[in-house]
Length: 200
Ligand code: GRF
Image 1 (cartoon, helix red, strand yellow):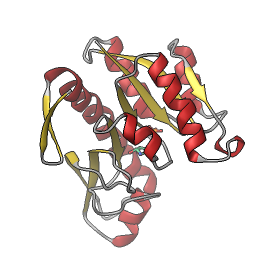
Image 2 (cartoon, rainbow, N blue to C red):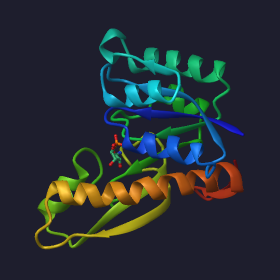
Image 3 (cartoon, rainbow, N blue to C red):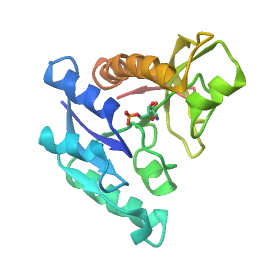
Image 4 (tube, rainbow, N blue to C red):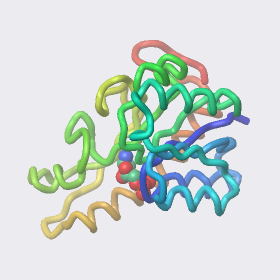
C-alpha cells in the first residue's frame, strides 16, 4: 500500500473525501501526513479526528520557501511518503519538493484548465459568462496550475448560478473524481507524465 501525504490550506473537504474512501476500502492508500500552511484551519481538525498526523507550519516563521520545503521533505521522507496530493493547498510548490517528488505530485483545480488558473477560479468562471466550467486534476510543475492534465470533468453553469451553488456542484464532482483518479494512479499503474509513460 502506498503512503501518501495530503497538503491542504483550508476546509479540507477533498481531504475528507479521500479519508472516507480509504476507510470504505475503495482506495488502497495510507495517508501518512497532512501538511498544512495555516494553523487553525478545519483540515487540521479532520486529521485529528481520523488519527492522521499533521505537519502544520507558518510560512512567515521561515526565511524562505526553500527552508520550509526542506522541513516538509524531511517529514515526508521519514514517513516513507511516495506520493503527494494537493487538495486546496494555496501555495506554489518550489524546486525543493519538486525535485524530490518529480511526477509524483498531483493537484485538483476547480476549472477546466488552462482556463481560470490561480485563485478564485469559480468566481473567474462566473464573471466571464461561460456556460461550462468544471474540475481538472493535473500533475504539478513549477507553474501556477500548468502541469500535465490527467483528467477533466465538466460542470454546467446555469443562468441563475451563484458562487455558492457552483462551488457546491464542483465540490460534488471533486469528491468523487479525486479518489477514483488516485486509485488509478496509485494502484492500477501506468499513466502518462508529459510524453513519458510512468509506472507509479
Ligand atoms: C477545491 O475546490 C480545489 O479544487 C481547490 O481548492 C478547493 C479546496 O476545497 N484547489 P476543500 O478545502 O477541499 O474543501
